[in-house]
Length: 79
Image 1 (cartoon, rainbow, N blue to C red):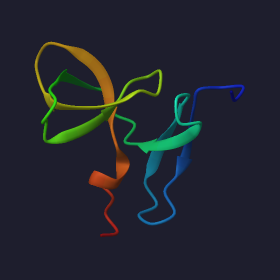
Image 2 (spheres, rainbow, N blue to C red; image 1 turned 45 degrees about the vertical axis):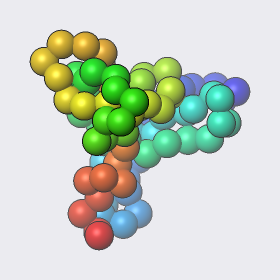
Image 3 (cartoon, rainbow, N blue to C red; image 1 turned 60 degrees about the vertical axis):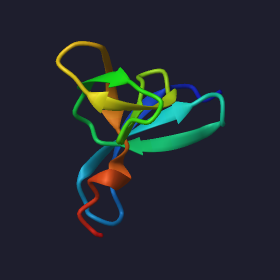
Image 4 (tube, rainbow, N blue to C red; image 1 turned 180 degrees about the vertical axis):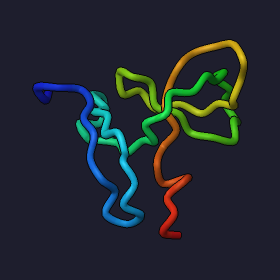
């Protein structure tokens, strides 16, 4: 497991700041948008969220529920 769970860097494609979050179950880093969002978990949710602990789950935006980050590739301006 890495020394830290999250760090900021610049996206190589769109040059915006992203938050890298470590996913311990897969042993890899996930690029996320740095804005924290509220969401509700749903099995067939339209978006993919990443918890501060690095867990990846499907869900939808909500006014109540858990806090997490959206995967960056959804918003990457280079596509």
